[in-house]
Length: 450
Image 1 (cartoon, rainbow, N blue to C red):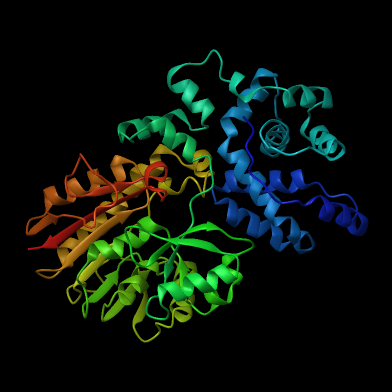
Image 2: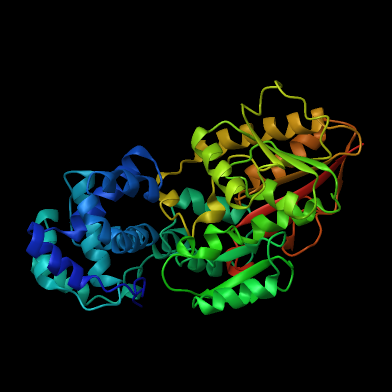
């Protein structure tokens, strides 16, 4: 079954580029982005941004490059299986990635191929056109014949076997549905800036811009995006701060904090500032963001400015694991620590290739340190919300159980509203999944300092 990953017609642009600058291979740029991402273990977006900074004349190729890099990462093991069955041996990571791109295009992408361009890419990758055309006739479902158990699932859904075991340990409901869903684009959600505009008015304005949305059945300030053309960030409504792009699971965190009007809030790993600004939008008196990364702090400043919250949200650059700032004056503490981001596999399939089991171990230690620090510093009656955009037990309920086991004068309370699946490991907490809730994979727990 071929993957219809692109609706972008870039053929005319490529032809014009050839006329102006000489031949350029789209596949070459894609392979270079993949190589930077995998070699340096950075996101596809970061790798592409770095590459295009030196290739500004090729900016118009960004959309197809994005489509192809996502496609290769979503199906890398299936592609590698095809190459393995045909005795392909790469001499470099770049050559392997170029071969992966060619195989993806002819085997899994649902569009007519331009063989003259593919011939050049195939030659550079060390593939004959006879072999490429033979591969194009393969039924993808035939590739996993003869495989069974975890090996079959690993190849079919392009998930490393160690990671597949993590998913099985986490007892993800309907595992194969989950594995299939993370090979597709994520559902897009936006948060209405209810302090600036009525929801109905924003819906009408978006409709006039050909952005179709529907109200969410659970959260009053969240809209599900059904269709749009172009980029949401280029809309005047976005520039005016009338909405923020935020996943529904992420928006749920502030609602779980609940009943915080006139309260003071701190997000000790504030990142781009979505949760802190949401808390202010819901009525919190003030919010503070602690962030160690200059880049993420800069993103938070831009969001605060765009949402017109400069007077209510502050940013402090610091390491939240060190007690340089007391958290005892805050009524709500949000702990949304760095994690493996496995809940974002729809958006970041490259994680399947660059993550290691040791990363999850080190992340869980950092998460435990941050949550423990928040609980220890919290004043009596303070609410602590622990949320992570991942699925593994070692980064979610296991962290929570260790902290609860070490510290006294803290109790678990129901993480409501309950939208996700109640967690069996720690009752009262909840999990969300892309194949069930159309959100990122997420874990949310709520504690109260006694």
